[in-house]
Length: 47
Image 1 (cartoon, rainbow, N blue to C red):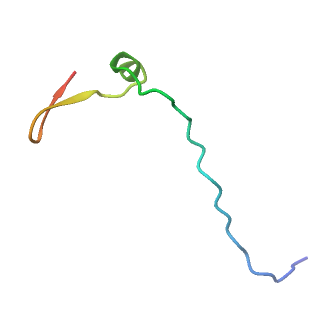
Image 2: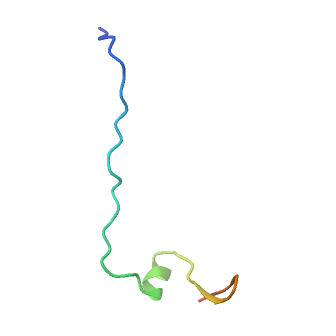
């Protein structure tokens, strides 16, 4: 059975966790992120 009505795509809001405080360096490393710190113009150092 077909209704012959046009199809509409619905996009809902993105589910992003609400973080109140920024992650610490140790928390970011435990989560698997690479932590970089800017040393000079265009130069970053891995922490």
